[in-house]
Amino acid sequence: AAAPPPPSRSLDKNDDGTGGGEEECDAETITSKLESLLRDHSRRDPGESLSAEELSRTVATIDGVLAFLALMKAKRSHMSSVLRQLESDVAGLHERLEDSEDLVAVLKEDEQDLRRLCLPRDVWAPFDDSSNSSGGGGGGGEDHQSVAAARAADGAEDPFTREFAAELWGAADLQDLGLQADGATLARLQSLIRSLKQQHEKELEVLALRRSVAEAEDRILQHLAKAASLTGGEGEREAC
Image (tube, rainbow, N blue to C red; front, side):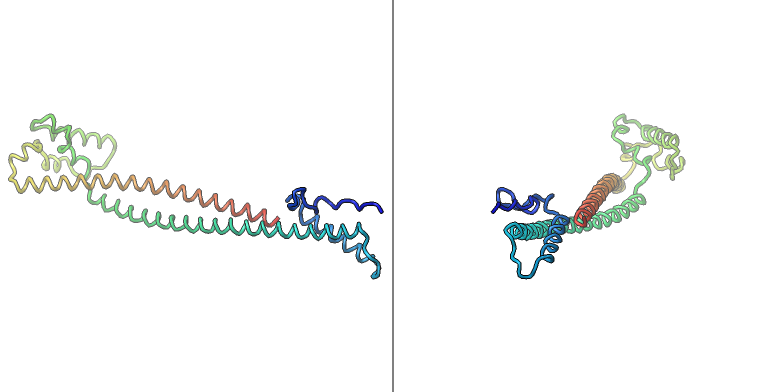
């Protein structure tokens, strides 16, 4: 008797004994083979035995079905692990986003407090190192006038009037003020200056932190968008 033809490659195993290629072991091919096999069996008489060719086709079809089911099981396991990892990543990103929102709220409150505490830039002029290095009694007044002129050119609103600023600093700089004031008054003034400088430095740190938080929020949103697109793409491939 002639040797039966080899079974279909889409339902056979590779030469190394592993399952057939993923692109060949598809649902449409398996369904077509099963329908053909059922039609052949329906036309057969109950007492008629299977030929060698039909038996080979039946075995090949069963092997193909088993290979297809194993492939689908492996795909399902892989997709489940990917989805679990994505869910974990999204949960972590959500927590980080909530922490960032809380931090932004706290920083905004600190910034509002600092705005209420910080004095205009004019007040710092007599205490600037560059203004004190020249010495003389008129240094403070000249610095104040130059800073006030710069603020006026920028259109900034100065809560201190010119009269108040002149009364506060006048023509006296720190050296003259130290000669006229007693030790306790000078110590309190120096303490106030240190406090104001610390508040000013803190305000700069808050602004830098706000920029860092904004950049972190942008990165988190980009990561979330990327994770969502990956999840949607995997879902479409699984549905197909």
